[in-house]
Amino acid sequence: MKTSVVLATYNGEKYIEKQLLSILEQTVLPYEIVITDDFSEDKTLNIVYSYVEKYSSVKWIVTHNKNKGFVSNFINGIIESTGDVVFLSDQDDEWKPNKIASYMKIFSAYTDAVLIHGDINVVDMNRHLLQAKTQKYKDGVSKLNFIDFVKKPNYPGMSIAFKKDVFKKNERFIYKHITSIKTHDFLLVMLSAFEGGVYTLGNSYCDRTFTGENVALREVNRSKFIRQDRINSAKTYINQYELILSYFSCHSSPIYESERIEVNKLLNAQKKRLEFLENFGFKEGLGLIRNVHHLPSLKSLVSDIFSK
Image (cartoon, one colour):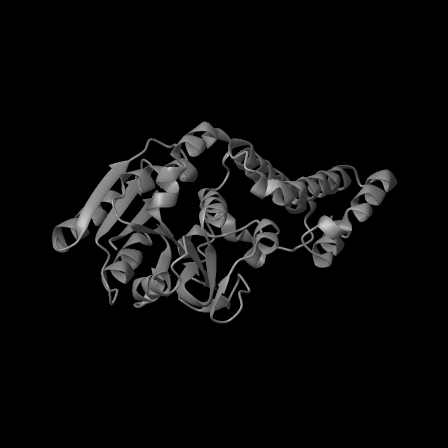
């Protein structure tokens, strides 16, 4: 199977070189590298083109957006890719040398695998470890079941590899819902969960760099009890559950009926959660407690109650 790396860039001159080198120094090189740039105004593209010239043994595709945001930027790169398996990459990651080889061995061993999501370490700009195994996956290789999938809102794309067929098969759905898709990574995991299988890895084959600029990593140095963050979390769940229900609506097969019922319960619980976080009233609190079994965890409930 041919492999593509889709690397989204935007004003990443401080980080892009390290990530390009970590991709180009893989024990198994990718067939192609797709750079999808969201109208960078610094030297990012100059650095990219210097590597295109230097590493001519790899196929390169450099494509451009015009400040469309990270979701459209990644989707643009996926569309342009031609490989059978697509690896996603942020501009400030750094891969272990055996990442591609390790993922491809798993695709070969688990024939129903459509998407693989590995664990992730977070490091600072000097490569010092800040957080290990942020996804808390079991050691080894495990298939993600439906309940675990729907109760986990965050699947950082930089540790995702997926078979492109799942994207091509669902292009009509993706384009129809493009304005309501908040994260491309959850979208890909969702489609893969229903179109085949999602496998998780207990090992981390890439480091995510905390630069101080990446909003997605602000939790590294933030309290878990900030109410606005809890509100945003509830809104993320609601968006994702509504996206899943939209997918079910496009696939009327009765095989999804039990999943549909479960997702509606989870959606209702998050709506009650949002009401509580926005109003902090006694009535809203009772509504939240009645739905406690459909919240991600008791720990999440405690954080909501004590948020400020």
